[in-house]
Each structure stands twice: as C-alpha cells, then as structure tokens.
Image (cartoon, rainbow, N blue to C red; front, top):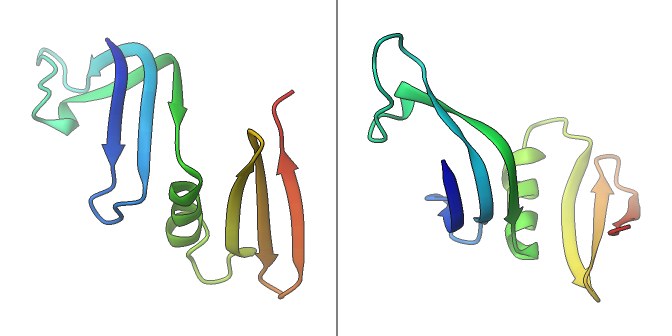
Length: 107
C-alpha cells in the first residue's frame, strides 16, 4: 500500500485536517481466511512502515484543546500553536492557571 497526497478531515471539526503527504505500509486482514475489504474498517489493520503527515496550526490547536486535553483534570488547557519563520511555537496554560511557553524546533 502506498498513498501520496491525501487528506483526512474530521467530520466533527472542519478545521482538523490531517494531510498525508506520503505513506507506505500494508493492510493486514483481521480475520483468518477472509480478505481485506476496504468497505469494512474492521476487516483490516494498517501496518505503517513510514510516512509523512502535516497539519495546520489552527487544526493542531483544535485537536489539542477539543480532544487531547479536553478531559476533566487535564494538566494543560488553552493550548495555542503559532508558526513563526518555519518554527512551531506552542504556548499553554497549566490547569493551575500559570502560563509557560516552550518551543519545538527542527534540528
């Protein structure tokens, strides 16, 4: 299986779009003696070997705030992501109310 330039958009949130730039792997049947059926998501698992994905800053913000850290007692709240000169800058608010910032930069 090889995929190039596909997009997966959340049905719930229009801003959460995962762009699959390149993906290589296998579809493996989950039931013995039955073939993989693409119309049946329970008939296979994807064994991903390598790939490259991308997501916009607003999509990342929605994903973090609405799903990843949306539970009661989450240690982080109100996460913001900005891309500045090709670098990702993330600011977050701890559940206790104080702010901290950190940077994720390419080597």
